[in-house]
Image (cartoon, rainbow, N blue to C red; front, side):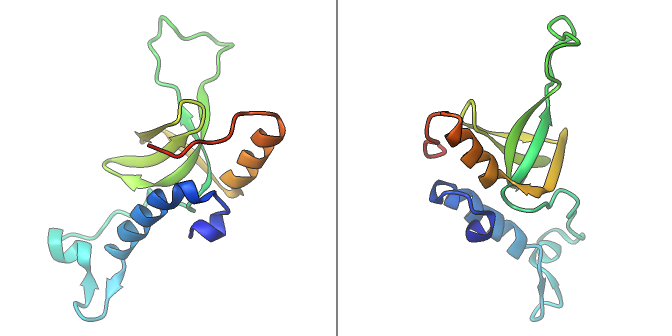
Length: 130
């Protein structure tokens, strides 16, 4: 998964977490259902599952007093999985993980391509996610 996304090795933790998430929601022939169904007695919601490492845009949820029509309404990040009640997005600028439901994902564009573009423009190297 990490190899297909072409993201640097610093994202291995997110990839491993996403693999476990998918494994628990994959059909098990021994049980005849998914592990999630075994634990919670309901089918898993797979609507938040997207391509690992793709580009995502997260809606800026700011107060109306600080909103302005010329300010950006979303920020760009990298989709690194699902968790809690939303999607996990890595914010490259602030170097933090954000979980949000207000996300638009571009599954056809890779976050690794964006990282290469930022490196060419002179953005500092990406440090290991904390």
